Image (cartoon, one colour):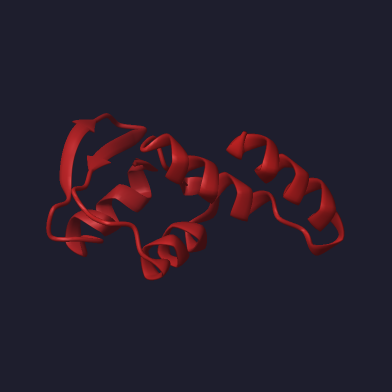
Length: 88
């Protein structure tokens, strides 16, 4: 997971999970590594941070977060087709 420097300071003081480890720190961003099973609560926490956070891996979870960020009720059919294509 990669975060803006500002958000990284917050997560350093209040980690998302006990396994949180900073693996790369720059003035612009920090990359954190976690060893966990993704949960609904984690997903909500990630989504609440908007563009200040990016899930890097696993790819399936990254795609799930992107799908949730892009979801608009009026585009439901298009997204459902996109999800079906991902499964094929």
